[in-house]
Image 1 (tube, rainbow, N blue to C red):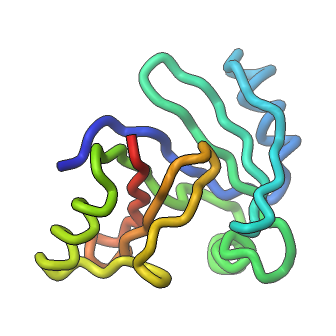
Image 2: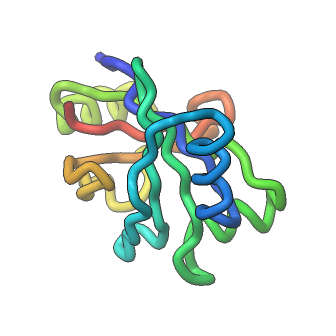
Length: 134
């Protein structure tokens, strides 16, 4: 059901500093910072040959990333994202098998402009999983 690894998301307190580290120290190609108010974050994508790293900075106190950083002051891996061919079929199969989809269960448009869903970390060994329509 799952396809390729789309990205690994890392929560950071200072997206400019994290971007500079990846760009200047590691020599990575990085995108511009893009506010995503509907998700409460600002994102930067780091392009790798086989996947991406997504940097997430909170956009406001109610951001889920702000809450994550309250629990993890140094930041860290927030979630992993896998591509799926059919997000609704994937959701239905996962729910049938007992996995919990966060939120309303309906896909939302993610940072790449494609439908996404998040799966409860307790159902995936403590890892928040994002599914993105391929």
